[in-house]
Amino acid sequence: MKIIFIILIFILNINNIKAYENNYFSIDIPQDYILETEEDHSYKWIRENNYIAITISNNKELNYNISTYTKTDIENQRKYIENNINSKLEDFNIKVSVNNIKKIKLNNKDVLNYSIYWPTLDSTGYNTYQIGNVFTTNNYITTIVYSSDKEINDDSEYYNIINSVIIKDDNIKNNNIYSILIFIVMLVLIIVGYIRRHKTKKA
Image 1: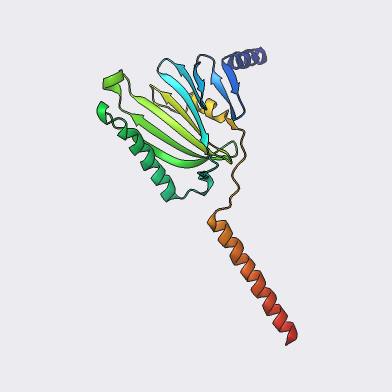
Image 2: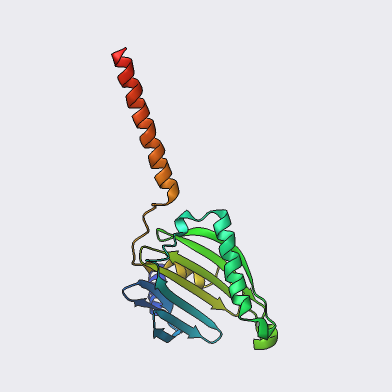
C-alpha cells in the first residue's frame, strides 16, 4: 500500500511540472506558471506576484568567465548589480540591497549566485525577494532570476527549479593570464633542468 501511495505522489509531482527546452537551455517550470515573454532571448514565466525570468546575451566579445572570478571581482559585481538597479529606482524612493553573492557550482557550471531584497511593501503591498544566477559559457551569458513575494527558504520551489537547469553551451576553457604564466614558468624550469643535466654530463 505504501509503495502505491509513493508512486501516486510521484506521478502527481510530475504532472505539476512542465519542461521547457530550446537551443540554449532546458528548465522545469511549475505547472501554474504562465509563459508571458518568449522573444529576443528573453523568457519570463509569471504566477501572481512571482516570476521566473531568463535572459541570454552574447559572450563572444566580452568573454566573461565566472570560473576565474576572485573575491574582488565578485564584490565588484555585487556593487555593479546593486548600483545599476538603484540608479533606475531613484524616482520611486526604493533602494535594493544585493546580498550573499558568491560563486557556486550548478550542474557542472560555475555560477555567480546572489540575493536581492526589494523593500516594495509601501508601493506594491508586499516586499520582493529574488535570487539571481549568472552562467558564463563559451558563447553566452545566461541570467536566471527567481522572484517571490515571500522569503525564499530551504523549502522553496526555487531549488527544484534552479537544480533542473541545463545550459547547453560549453564551458569556457581556462586560458587566463595566470594559466599562461604557469605554463611559461614550467617551460622555463624544464629548459633549465635540461641545461643543467647537459652540463653535468659534459663535466
